[in-house]
Length: 241
Ligand code: HPA
Image (cartoon, rainbow, N blue to C red; front, side, top):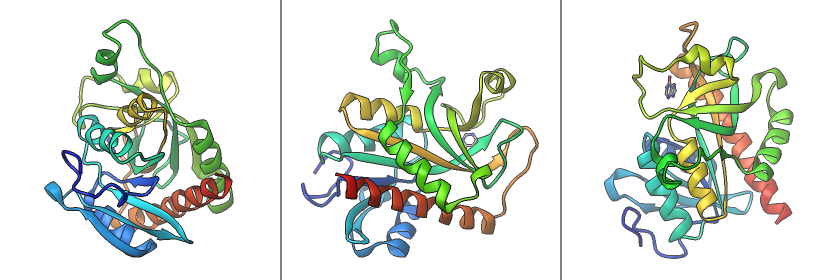
């Protein structure tokens, strides 16, 4: 048991899928996993463990934003000895060739959050990066399961604010940032702290430059594709272990 998770020591698997929305965690567990048990209801931030093709996998809601995601990531790595966290979320695109319904893998995560600065006492600008092993595996699985021009790998912006009119998105886009979300940098930094693995994959739910949006039905369909990529990635990582 940790401060925000009431699971017993062995109730969480070594692989964790990490959606922002706890109800999405419930949906994923009920739709894709067998022999599911709910291990956390604290603050309604639901967590479930089940099996996928025989591999034990947990699904934990992270909440929105770096502070919330870092609470759960820290407790998963530190108290429950989790090895791999895969964030499955949505992001807003800021590049012309990244479209709604595409999938973006966060190779790195730039952030305006003070969290990373504080960890290094302002003396370094730490580059929050994904686990190459997990990214490499997920990228190759995605090439098999998804139209290859819908897959992008690169820099995310993990923004502290959803509503941020001051951020120079054009400059970020010029520097190659693909899309904006709110958690990856914090999860990557926490994985690094514990020498574990993390990857953030996001479906593009809206295009910040063009105003293009997805319908609820489209979000569900693309989310399903991303889920399959995430689950198959964990399956393959487990086969290799
Ligand atoms: N900003 C931050 N997070 C997001 C966005 C956005 O525009 N779209 C989806 N998640």
